[in-house]
Length: 391
Image 1 (cartoon, helix red, strand yellow):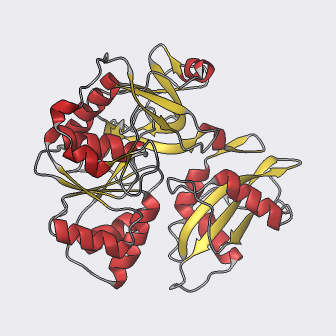
Image 2: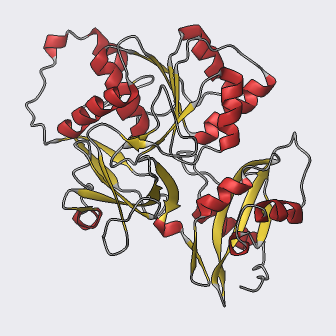
């Protein structure tokens, strides 16, 4: 194993510049099989401890093939990469396809929206992939600092919900529609809205080439269109398992299908709509509530910048809905009752939050998602249990 350093290198680490200066025939490659591990990428740990996802040479090669076809990539593309290559999205959908095609990657470390705009303009970037929270920051920047981005052809966002108002504002400022995607470290980029042509805003699109998708009920039976079910994925790019964790591997991959723990429904056009994590469902008096559904509604209020919804323990109902909200400083401040009334216009009464807490920041995971476990702990440490309405 060789460790390469890009800047100051401690003992045992080979400088990047020295590697570049070494003749290619001076470093023979070891023999390896396509089924041997090529990379181990760790999950974000949003609902459990992070697990090491094994990517073999074969699964990475399949991922390159699938992503190239799904995103219609070619050697002329210039990718703006804002995520670490330790993140599966940057590695599998940007770096590796670019190396295979001879395309270009422009690397930015923790860029500000200004950095992003300047890099796109300076390098003529054609492709941009961002986390929804970072895309939202870019939209806020473009609203106050308009900029022409004529080279940009495709913008991808995934890892969390992309609020419709963010998509609409981005389209207004750039003329481009956001392509929403769904994937996991175990099976990245499995469903997507196409980079060009018709999209279905708010959806996670259709299966990528070579990817098979099922929706099943708790008994493992396939559900019809319009019904909620767990997403099962089969793909040549699917992980072979978790590093040193055969128990988790056996539980997650059954007969070649990855049980994702994510819930979705499929419409009559074969388009999939993400409904949230099964482990994060709120059960109020026996009724299942998707926190994502409630978040989508609250996020439509013009004063809401970011929102997270959690299940609050309740002695009679089991759980009730509680929300944490980060407000937009440029908008009039609503009261809690006003925001609850707004939400109640679009949701059944039992799905409307019992309490809405205004917070200066929401806890985020390393990949920019609202961390619901930390949000619940934060609210519990700062508040008393809400007095529930009658069921």
